[in-house]
Every structure is written in structure tokens, then in C-alpha cells.
Image (cartoon, rainbow, N blue to C red; front, side, top):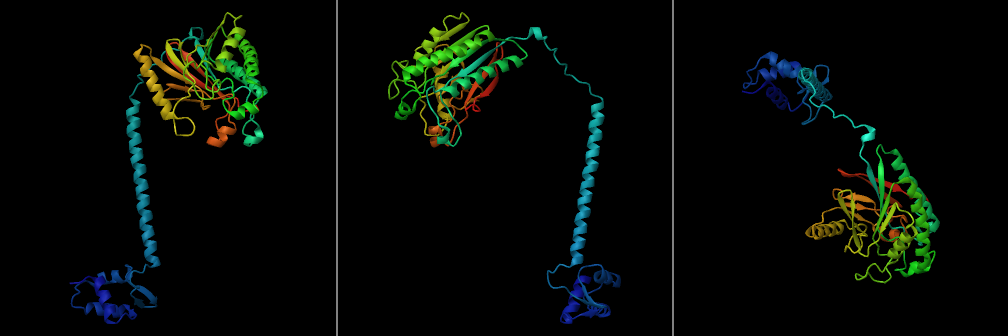
Length: 400
């Protein structure tokens, strides 16, 4: 037994695919012994399915195999639209049901949270500022034309950037809603650019002796500008690699360094102020207390790497080793304050506090790394119980 559709196809095959009238189709199908359907079914096949294609008045043909009629496409599109409309409507109904349930449940709820009362302004805990101060590279000259205008640097620019630095410190202090009881300054080295490279000896603005003595005079005036603004100022220092007096890095007596000499002259210049303390140990690292937390100052050089920029893997490994070494001696290091890389950042869950530079990018950083961070110094804020609570990046690059 065959279906009406199959009977119609067989009728056209018997007539070798020629055009047939409706009566010819009906007669051929009825004459087919394998078809036992009704006339009504056959009419549906002819008029309501997409099996036949009308070619002229009263004549029909079978469409080419796999051909899709315009009517079929329209019906298919209509079915898709109806299905899409039904789905959208179903989602809307579901959303409304869900909203009704949530609204009903919400109506019976009461808040559990009760905000703690805010302390009065007079009872707010005093904080401390910690300024990372490093990589001045005093006496170096960076010609803007040599690096496509990315930066310019000389002695005058260095001093004007220090003006911006002190103004920013005052601005941060004035906008805080709590008292800032004192200022730590961490001198992290490379205060002078030195002459460890032959090209620096040729291009530096002044000789090393002139650089160290004039820098101490100028920076003493800069620190004096801070004195009336803070009850006390504590300056703790480590020397960098650019100030060394030897061509290659030395590990014995590493304080034989122009940075260290600068710190000592600066200490002498500021000795008249009882509110200022300056510590410049001979060690390449220096542990400092900020409230109850210990910060280890370290210039950051000497980390082996084959990567450009900051060797984060090497820095992380070195700080881990330093943590273990100090822990064995009963000293728990909370943070490392690091210079050298000229890339301001706070990484490793606030373990490593990386400073920028006052100099900014130069010919070396452009040729070696394609650029470099703009002149930046970082100001941190410490709370006596919560430790480090804020890190502010002070942009100095606009002064050229």
C-alpha cells in the first residue's frame, strides 16, 4: 500500500513527467492498485502540499528534485516566526512567574544588616605617608630630539619635577579625611646617574663631585619645604648601582658609592632640624618600621634575567629568599620597597612596592625596550592597624 503522495509521483512517472490535469492525476492515482486512500486525501496532496507545481491553468508538474518553491520557503519562514514568537512569549510568561514569586518572597523579608556607627571626625586614627623617592639620575641629560619627544631631562627639569612632587604630597594630605601624623621618605638609590657607562661621562651635565654636592644642597632645600607641613620626617636610604665607583658591580664595601656620599652630605645639611631623621646605613638593604610593619628597602639590582623590562619572576624569587633569610633571624618582612626598574607598581599581594623614576624614559630604554614608564614617584599611606591602605602614583612626566 502506498500513500497519496507516492501515488501522485507514480502517476507522473507513468506519463514520463509530462504536465497533467487535475482529472488525469486523480484518474491515474485511482487506477493504481496499490493506493487505497480517499479522494479527500488526494485533494490535500494536490492543493495543500508542496508536491505539485502549477505551470498553467489546470496543468501541474512535479518540481525538479530537491527544488524549493517560493511558497515552501514562505511557509517555512512563517513556521520559524511562529516558533520564535511562541518561545519569546514563553520566556515572558516564565519571567513574570519568577518575578511574582520573588516579589512575594521579598515582601515578607526584613533586613538583618545594621551598619556600624561612623566614628566622629575627631576620633579618626592618624595615618602616615610613605614616599618612595628614587632614580633621580641627577646630572643626566636626555635630549627630546633623540627619543622623538617622548621625554626631556636635565638638572632644571629634575628640580621642577620635585616641585610637582611636593605639591602633590601636600594635595594628597589636604584632601584626606584623617590626620597624617608624619612622613617617611624611602631613598631607594640611583640618586645620581654616575659614569658607569662611558657615554654618561661624556654627556652628563656636570662632573660627579659637582653633581653630589649640588644635589645635596638642592635636595636639602626641597626637604626643608616639607618641614612645616609634617610633625616629623624620617628619611631612610639605600644606595643604587649607578652611583658605584667601580666599572663592575662590587659586593664588598658596596657603600663606596656616590649615592651614599650624597645621603651623608644631605644628612649634614638637615642636621639643624630636630624633626628630621636621616638614616643611611652601609648595607645594600635596610629594614624600616612603619607602625608595626617591617619594610625592607632595596634598590633592586643584581637580579638575573633574560627578559626585557622588570624581571618579575626573578624579583619574586629574590624576595622569597630574603623573606626566608630574615624570618630565620626572627624578622618578619611585610613589604619590599624597590627602585631600579623605573616601573611603578604594587604586586604580589602588596608584598613588592615598586617605584618609578624622576628621570623617565631615555635613549637606552627606548632602544632596549621600546620606551619606558613616564617619570613617576609613588606615595603610600599606612594605617597603624590595617597597614598599607592606599598607593598613589604621582605623575611627573608633564614637566619637560
